[in-house]
Length: 130
Ligand code: HEM
Ligand code: HEM
Image 1 (cartoon, rainbow, N blue to C red):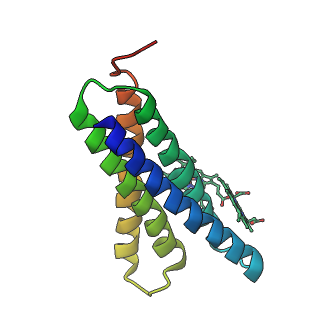
Image 2: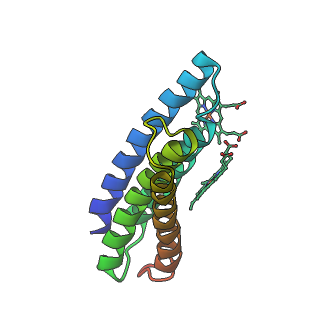
């Protein structure tokens, strides 16, 4: 179970890495830095954090398999939700309702917070604690 989620998380992270660096290149080319925090979170949360979680599941065996699925899904939804929500909230490119974009941002951020909290718990529930 961990190993299946490991490669899924790593693939998800790799795609975020590509998107984040394309965004960075676009910011540099356009000399427009309004996307800076979105670029930063896509890479630090979507690429680095999710990649680290993926590697963790390759290395460790977790006692409660259900928790691994819940964490991995929350991690992916949180990374996507936070960055998409931040983009909509900061720039609102489609002129959506302000309350709606704020809720989107809050939901994304909360999911990500939950993923971090779940992961902290999971580190104490491994079988091979060498
Ligand atoms: C093609 C590669 C990349 C390009 C062209 C690029 C470009 C940029 C640019 C133009 C900025 C804004 C700088 C400013 O406002 O003065 C920035 C900020 C940032 N980048 Fe990248 N970046 C790249 C890759 C990465 C990677 C791989 C990471 C992390 C894994 C990263 C993390 C960050 C962070 C955290 C910030 C915000 C820094 C701050 O708050 O001062 N970037 N990047
Ligand atoms: C619940 C999760 C999170 C929320 C709601 C959140 C929110 C924010 C906000 C509102 C900012 C200010 C952006 C701006 O200047 O417009 C920020 C900046 C930043 N955050 Fe987060 N963040 C979260 C998680 C993280 C994580 C997990 C990392 C690193 C792994 C991170 C790294 C950063 C960095 C480097 C900046 C400065 C970026 C810049 O200057 O453009 N954040 N964050």
